[in-house]
Image (cartoon, rainbow, N blue to C red; front, side, top):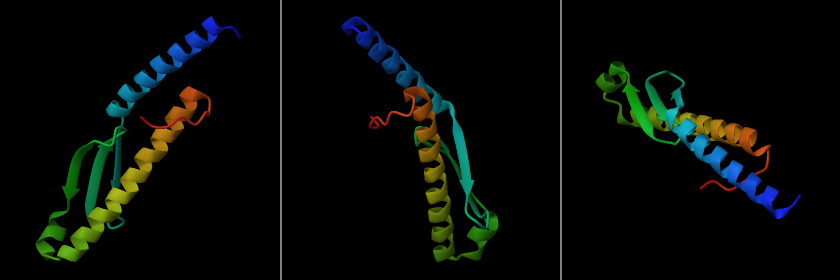
Length: 101
């Protein structure tokens, strides 16, 4: 492979990764706490799009339970976003592990 071909491949990869970032922003992922009391919605760029808290949880006045449910939903949705991003990047890069930027 000559230098021109390598440069062309690098430019193609750069464009594909830029397109991927746009797709991350458009992709919505949602997760809830196990009891369903808290639901969070994020996009693939880790931006929070929505939070739903069950009225019963708020009415109960149990701050600790609300905090646990929120943390659980957050851990779950963040893991989902991370997995989604890794899978999509692997498709674009052919499994080559590139650092996030």
